[in-house]
Amino acid sequence: MKYEIKYKPAFSAIFVTLEPGEKIIAEAGAMASMDSHVTIKTELSGDFLSALAKKFFGGESLFVNVFSNETKQYVNLVLTQSVVGDIAEIELHGKDMYFQPGAYIASTPGVKMGVRWAGFSSWFAGEGLFKLRLSGKGKVFFGAYGGITKKAINGEFIVDTGHLVAYEPGIEMGIKLANGLVGSFTSGEGFVNRLSGRGNIYLQSRSIGGLVGYLRSKVR
Image 1: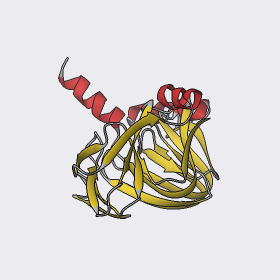
Image 2 (image 1 turned 30 degrees about the vertical axis):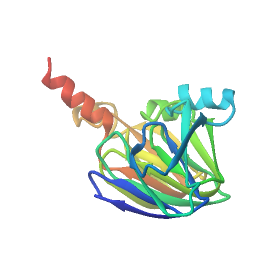
Image 3 (image 1 turned 180 degrees about the vertical axis):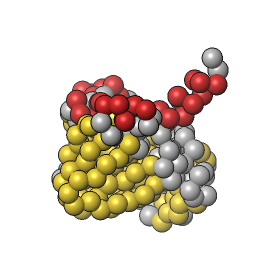
Image 4 (image 1 turned 120 degrees about the horizontal axis):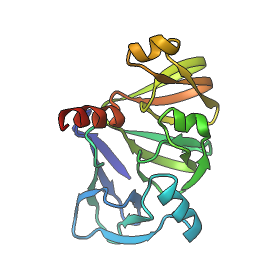
């Protein structure tokens, strides 16, 4: 499979070329366009119970679409996300990766999807009670609102709520005030997400919650 992520960083889209016999799995609604010879099959995202868990707890669709090339020629399709922002790709080699709800776009066969409890610290940090767990081997494409930054941490690192997109299992979350009780709220920072451990994290430059708050203030 060949691919190229174009129109970065604000309007990213994945241009995929499938060789004969190849396939790619994508979140429902991710397809922007495709050749007429591409075969598309809609199926549950795992078994029924795991699909329900991903729908209600992981922020993903109940169904996924499998795009395959059953011809003897190359076929093309374009995948994208609903929000304005960047798209990135990582390669899993048997190691898990955790994603925040709504970040997943597509993956190659061999990648498995599940849901894990994230804890109340994650919920207070604006990241949700559950996280999407991807494991196995293959490529994973994910998106964010705004630009995506990859950062390796070793120890503690502070992230404003709503900006964490993905992280490795060695990272743990904790919630704290940004600058004491009075200073945190007078500065407008409030609670922040205190990450600890060792591994890679992916951050988005914008926050959906921040956008919602801004729009709400303008329509009163």
